Amino acid sequence: MEQRTVVRCAEGHLFSTSTFPMQMLGPRRLGPGRLIRCPQCGRLRSSVPADVSELSEPQLARAMRLEAAEFLA
Ligand SMILES: [Zn+2]
Image (cartoon, helix red, strand yellow):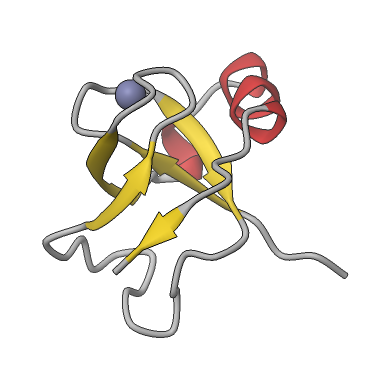
């Protein structure tokens, strides 16, 4: 089963990625973020895991449809 993480870019866009290293960043530990190419900005952005409990169903559904293709450390 594919595990995807909902993340939020520095501009506030929500999207999902299957490559976010959750083993390094727990859901409650917002670290410095990771550089991920945001599908909405089209740029590498410092992104952190979003707190899914704070998101509405539509926000979550939208984020799940927007998957980041690239991941850089
Ligand atoms: Zn963005």
